[in-house]
Image (cartoon, rainbow, N blue to C red; front, side, top):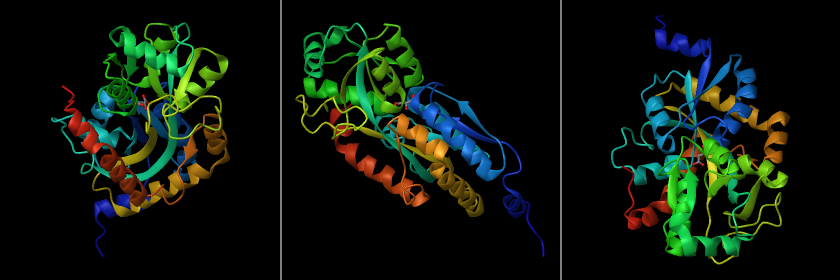
Length: 312
Ligand code: MLT
């Protein structure tokens, strides 16, 4: 029988290096998680997995590249819950986040923390909110660009307090945190993955967590809901994607590699140190990621549309 090139290729997948695109700058939480899972995934797949950072505009630049890549399993992407919210902010996205990709699985969940530069005057979360209320136009709030969780968190705070801040976009929250540590900006909402070490060492001022519950790893930090922003809740998930139309056998191999990576003690131990929760086995599947993304769209759609806010 004739064996087509495509099916032969699927049988030998992977026979060369796989690129995992991180649509954010190096040093951010997505980059950190990508580097942690790439190693055991590479082991499971028997090929190298290299990280390529393509930051900017809430991950839409990198995601646009991946949407146009060959769906052969050699280009994958780790994105955030921005995959659900970017479409609501950008009218001119060159791709649809729900149509252009093959979801492969949820990778992790993490709460965000509201942190300030070390010498920002407010000492508590309530004082930080007062400070924004009184002088939001003097507060430089770093984020990864209009659309994603680090931006959405700031937007929600602005909406609830009725005071705009100065939104400062970066190619990812990694460089935003670097500038916060350097005192160039005042505040960020950043995934605990990236802030927990700096919170513990006192390099940043931690004000609050943005999840509905306090974080077990930082039990003294109040939720924003506790200090007056009733119902405030943002947490972030990271998901593994490829371009749409990936052959099923390739999808299956990547998902199996993800599943085994999430059980690797090197990953689970490091995630625990970084207050990051690995996805449950049934979430770390194409159906799991699709459902998670749809639920996230439903959660924000009305609020974002009603805000009338758009990216350029
Ligand atoms: C990043 O990796 O830079 C962040 O995940 C971006 C974000 O939280 O918006």
